[in-house]
Image (cartoon, rainbow over all chains, first blue to last red; front, side, top):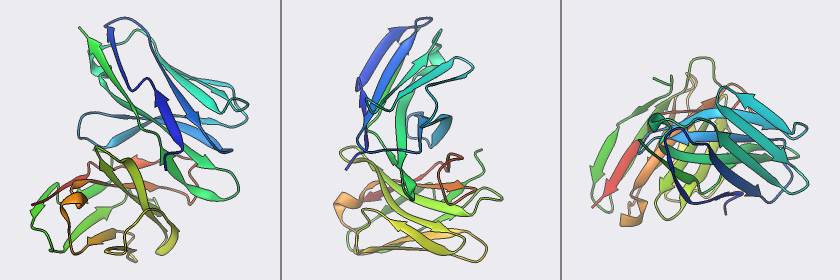
Length: 112
Length: 114
């Protein structure tokens, strides 16, 4: 079963706008990670946020984490055509679970 | 190039056959993970190895098996293939046994069973 569920499933925005996608998960975590996948390619690690962190930035990416609500959001600012991809959240689980479980993904399309 | 090498990139085979997918992890990484990605099931964890030993097992069918060799490369063996096994198979690697450092993914093997 999926640990994370992204919302929305698909998102289309104009180039230059901001894109926000959300992830909800079910169990306690050590960290939450976001990955990008261009069509049919391998996933690329974007950012990791630990359970004791609330917000993290990397370039045009901003990630927030609310452990009380078991949710996270990924904000991409000033979107570019090259940001068109699927975005996945991934979580581990507390107490020794070492594998990442991936959500269902948000398909982001940037319209030039 | 992510540093994780998967071969072959594409594989077309008939039902009932057996195939072997190969993965070389990024230099220095000791953990290898196998994932299956299909349209209807999303990205499913299959199995994890760390420094040659199996660490975690996910939704891996009994027809599937894997191993990690002393040089740390890994192979995923799929046997008695069915149409439903058609999917993208990804290998990922990580420096540690825990997930705190993120995964580096290969470009995948696209398996088509006909």
